[in-house]
Length: 461
Image 1 (cartoon, rainbow, N blue to C red):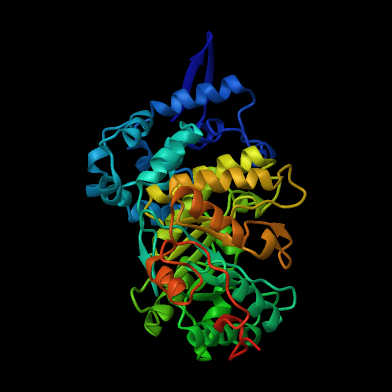
Image 2 (cartoon, rainbow, N blue to C red):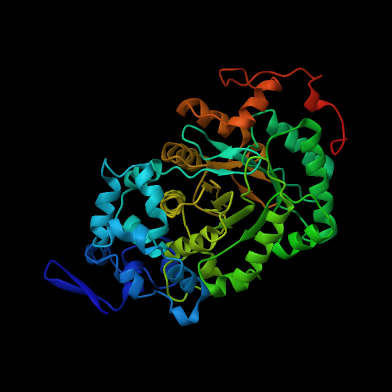
């Protein structure tokens, strides 16, 4: 159905819902590249005003990608919880936005509402929000997951310890892991992006990670971020797999470009659950997403990149993951041009995912050819901490020497925990105190060269 709104005696028509969503999106380079963005600021405002009047029920009847053409659309519609949707079924997008910001809409209300929200509803509401609105709404949400520790609790802030190495040298990786642990990093996961994605190399890394974790009795989980088929082969070979990783997107074609399907993800989810390696919970999946992935694969179907990103969260939600994160600035300036666009996109991603019930983290990052710098990342890191982000990355020196991009350092997590009064996951915090890395008040301690973590052992020498 057509949509329209009049501004200053000029009527702006929008052919369909996906066009309206795209034109209402705050400007970013990816939508301009795809020729989906509003041509003028006035047209964008007109689209936002028209979008505010769209009933939420419309999103259940008008798919941005046809039901018969896309398995992600089918997943969204077929899994929609009409009972959970009940409290907001009469709302327009604008009313939904205002209700999300209301005092009485608290964490409990949002927890029970999550199965009734579609990604497109969440994306639409956030297109009408300022950055402070995105922070305020996301902060209300609490999404808790468990494997060997408990992640996502209010007042807690976790990190993925990312010890990547350009040649997968176990000694270099182990050195980075020890360095990160001594700064209190690694409670979300110790996760390696392998330089080579083949089963033998991945199995070796998994065994090294598991030996190190068991040697020091660390209450965390490990992951080698290889393709899901490689992880399945590692499981078949008896490797100690904690989490299954996969990048996912918001359309069937995007996921096909990643070499995955919903059926393949379901197979991997079941295989990992059957290992029963978790001690306090059974969440076993780790997904990464990012605005621009569908466009870069020419698989967006005319849908703006933020809405495509939100649809990826429906894929993640299907498998009850331990971790999800947006690699927000990683894809490059063709999709998010500068620090301002990266910050906006990260706050959108975090808010949408939390509304949909996901344990959302963000890789606060940029590529070296983007118009961004570490000051932008400091700003974003602080905003995400205020917004209740579950975790960020911990990279030695904030410079990933294997993936060649800039992220957040081990020190950055210390900064955020200190200024906002946040603490690591409770089980991991207790371990840090037992190891003499943190004192009982959460302050980082200096360690002697004779400290256990600095002595060679299995998986470290």
